[in-house]
Length: 42
Image (cartoon, rainbow, N blue to C red; front, side):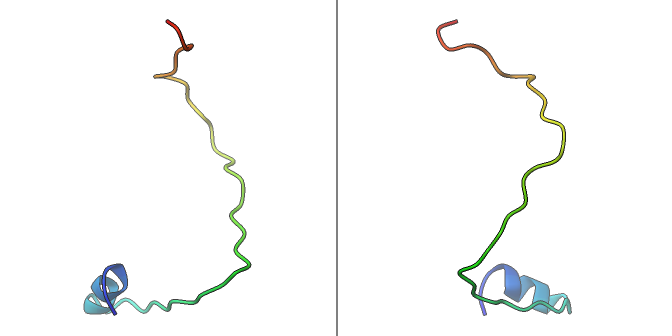
């Protein structure tokens, strides 16, 4: 094991890694702030 999973194992956190082709990421439901946005050409 290497990287993040190794770090978790070193800290006695149980984690497993599973490969999958059928991954679904739910849409973002939070609030989007437009603090640093501007129109192109300004």
